Image (cartoon, rainbow, N blue to C red):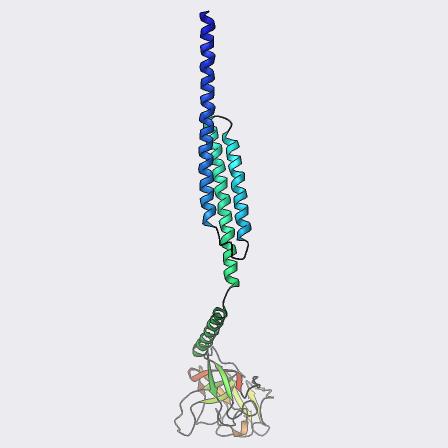
Length: 295
């Protein structure tokens, strides 16, 4: 009899322990699931938008609610089985997944709001953007003309037919090395007040080259070779005070294209031009408008 009573007591005790364990597991699962649902609701609430505004925000909220419900069910199922420790780990894993899902929803809502803001740009904003672009372009062009280019006006007929009186040309602000055939502007001072210091001429020979002119035939020779000069107004017959020479270092020999109406390196009052006094090379013409090319 005592054995029977002891067995009954043992069975009753084991039954109570199992029931207590099940109740504890269920309570732990409910607590974790409630905490997870509350955190997901808070994250989803941070990304809510006004239901009256246009765009994809309502759809995103519906998706968040659906995800939250699924997550609650999954968490409840996960914590309902296994030991309390396993249930807690499963609930924590589901919580992490729900947090990541809520973050993705918030990102989607922010992108939608940014797109909506771009579409709602006012005409004033667009005008302000255009004004900024124009101002920046003006500043860049101004700096380029200060440091890289300059404009010079042509005076007289010494460069006809290539350039004419009152033409306006663009110069590079510097010349690395003048070359034969370049049209340059010089500013070498003269001992004679009636000779202009600023001249527009063509480079005929550079340092180390020899120059000779057959004034009867009107042909210019450089290093013994006749120059092909389709740019001249007429052949070179005006001698002035020229004598055959070799251009010294750091100098150039220049002449105008209107050979018989040009005061240039053939005249001792102008002479050879030192390279330091070359202001720049002519690039193109800006006036008269439409005749940009310089021959």
